Amino acid sequence: MANRLRTSLRTGVPAAAGGVLATLAGLGVAHLTAALTDPATSPVVSVGSTVIDLTPTPVKEWAIATFGTADKPILIGSVFAGTLVLAGIAGVVARRRFALGAGLLVVLTALAGAAALTRPTAGAADVLPAVVAAVVGVLVLFLVTRTLREPRSAGEGTRVSRRGVLGMGAVALAVVAIGGAGEWITRARTRIADITLPAAARKAKPLPTGLEATYADITPLRTSNADFYRVDTRLTLPIVDVDSWTLTIDGDVEEELTFTFDELTAMSLEEHDITMTCVSNDVGGEYIGAARWLGVPLTTLLDRAGVGSGADQILSTDVDGFTISTPLEVATDGRNSMIVIGMNGEPLPREHGFPCRMITPGIYGFVGATKWLTRLTLTTYAEQSAYWTDREWATDAPIKVSSRIDTPKPLARVKPGRTAIGGVAWAQTRGIGGVEVRIDGGAWQAAELGPEVNVEYWRQWYLPWDAEVGTHVLAVRATSREDEVQTAARMKPFPEGSSGIQEITIFVE
Ligand SMILES: Nc1nc2c(c(=O)[nH]1)N[C@H]1C(S)=C(S)[C@@H](COP(=O)(O)O)O[C@H]1N2
Ligand SMILES: [Mo]
Image 1 (tube, rainbow, N blue to C red):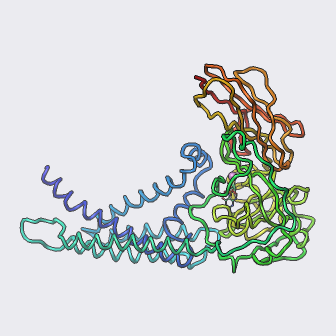
Image 2: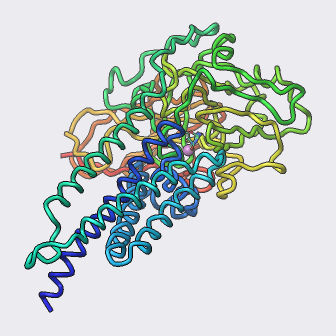
Image 3: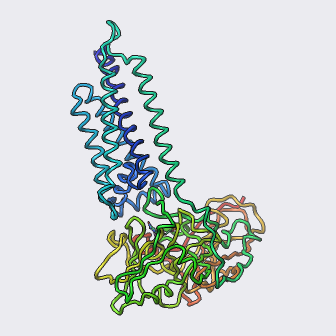
């Protein structure tokens, strides 16, 4: 019995390893193929993206709440682990019945091909990496299986030969090198470094000194590009060639227009300080950032195209066909909605939409801040719906009056004596009129406000406090300039943004 187990382990483990190796070889070469054509068609990426798109909204919410921004690596990891288990089984099966094992590998890669084909902008050529994965995978599986079957001298049983181990090692090294080359090419293909942006014709006022100069633990008045939160549905960043990239305005317009990157850059550019917020930001959360954006007012572009009388929605599309719908009035009611190419004095970083994105103050990012923008279609909500709308998120999502405590941190240990409670508050397009702090359930006390940049920007605040030894509960709430008080009613981010008052417990000792 023990002997039988040992023998089947001795033959099964190398066979499973062979299946895994064959699959990795296929994926590695496919990754390189994708890097040279379209990186989004790499099997791991296309399968992962499809899984993201098919995941029901509640599961997605749970994943974001549980894993935070690690949700994507965890998802990719699971898809990858599942694939490798099946690959191992294919290897074991192939040892006795090669056709069946190879068939299993082909089915696996066919799923990747199907995933690549269901992307919104897919063309027939997008299956190429999956086909390459199948061919290379089956070939390596054949070689590995043959090596494992080689007859050996008596007594040695079916132990893998030295030559077999060396061969497998060589294939593994080649896989790493080829996959790595693919990744390197993918990254080298965007040349953001070559771009210099012109100065704005209409500059923003210099940013005032923020409260962080005095209270270092309050979030800086401007978020650096490196610290800016990132939220999108993508597993890999798109590679956009600025020389062939264009922005098209079509749909219900008098004249369909197309702009190249150089044409956009040559227009009269404006700079605006605007705070962005994600609808998935929880009370007290980090999915918010404030930056100086450089670009063209959205109205300028729409006026050139001439919007028809029927349109009530701007459906924007990114380079991969992902869509966001924005109420037309956000472009026309006087707020600084923009088509931007610059962020804090630099071209848009790839994470934040290079080469061009939308910025729409006052509404959450998922209904206006389209990254990697290529198309603005003037249409109606009745006619066309966007990605998140199809997943039952709100169609109209104004940012709620909100505030956050940055210092002290929840559960912090603070020394007794003079200290400050501080943070940020926001009510984009309405502005912050006041912030109040409540200590241990007492009366709401007015906090000091930091400088006001504009009504589309967040505002810092602080309250000096003589902390006494003990456990304390701190709460904050903001009021807009229009006297709307931040609600205490608790809501989750889905479907139109979280609400409620942040309360933290701290220890003074
Ligand atoms: N193309 C594209 N644009 C997108 C998204 C996306 O998934 N794809 N996510 C949106 C969401 S939900 C938000 S909150 C903002 C986030 O922008 P940031 O990552 O630059 O902070 O981008 C928006 N634009
Ligand atoms: Mo978002």
